[in-house]
Amino acid sequence: MEKNILPIKKAVLIFFVFACGYFISALLRAITATLSPLLTSEFNLTAGDLGLLAGGYFLGFASMQIPLGYLLDKHGPKRVVSSFLLIAIIGTAAFALAKSFSGLLISRILIGVGVSACLMGPLTGYRIWFADEYQQRANAWMLMVLSMGFVFSTLPVQILLPAIGWRWIFGSVAILILLIIILTLLFIPSWKSEDSKNEENAGSLSDVWKNKFFRSTIPLGLFNYGGMVAIQTLWAGPWMVRVTGYTPLESATGLFWINTTMLIAFFIFGYILPKITKLGIESMRLMKLGLPISYLSLFVIIILGENAGALHFTLYILTSIVLTLTQPAVALSFPTSLAGKSLTSFNLLIFVGTFIMQWGIGLVIDLSQFLGKGEIQSFQISFTVYLIICILSYLYFIIKNKNE
Image (cartoon, rainbow, N blue to C red; front, side):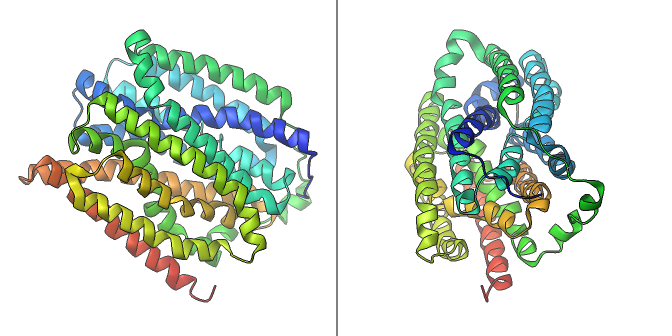
């Protein structure tokens, strides 16, 4: 498909509409970190149960990424995003009405399916409608919206809980999703489908997975990026409550400031990226130099144990920001005809990885406690396993791109 660069006013309107959808997606993704003490108490959840529940979102999300790539390339963001959000309404309403852990988990998976197009749809559209030099900025500013959703999932949700309860919070979100569907149908441009001959020559999914650069990012997407999201959206909260000793309100406040910091960071990062690129500093170099700093930040959290709080998790997430460069880098390494397939393929890695790491961190904590370790030491062991996996993923990426 050929580029169709839109006027600035139209582009801003499109970004706003998509941002509303992605805000709700982010809110639903991260809300389990704030609700974890309440849900653990009400449904008698273990650490593994909590990890599985939070990961259910990512399981549903990841299951849709490959078909989503085909649908986006063929039908475009308008039809696909609006259709998938109908499933999100069902999942959100079902979560609000759930009476058991299995009901929560099934609803959470449906929510993941329903919001699975809320980032990939916009990024596919931006690949066509925005100039190449602004792809990284658009990606960073969508992640700013992600952080905004995370911010609202923390302290604002904690404040609302005594007033309306967690079930009514989810009911209200379902109404907001309906409004976003209406905005999407009204303001997002229609997609011009390729003719059958062009579709045959557009490239296939195998072209994405055989690509050398894409394959070098697989461990980073699965374990490093996925694990960072798992910590930000779930395990930072339980660490602050069960290891550091925060109250639920203090933990929610800590998560609020973590995500507020990331919101500001993504705004600044998106603004300066095109300027950095013009200076000749490529994304690859930023990733190679920046990732080891994030590993050092995580190591400090592990060593400090009960003394590691919101500030330390903020530094870890902040120093991991260079991971976000991988997604637009992957998209730009393919032609526009493969925009949907390449973006959703990498997103699949991130969300499968987030599911694995959210559940896996919980399982290692439970296993360590079963083997007689204390709660603090169990968290430290689990995070150490994650750190080792991250370092191995980074080394694989470096080796595969040693000449870049």
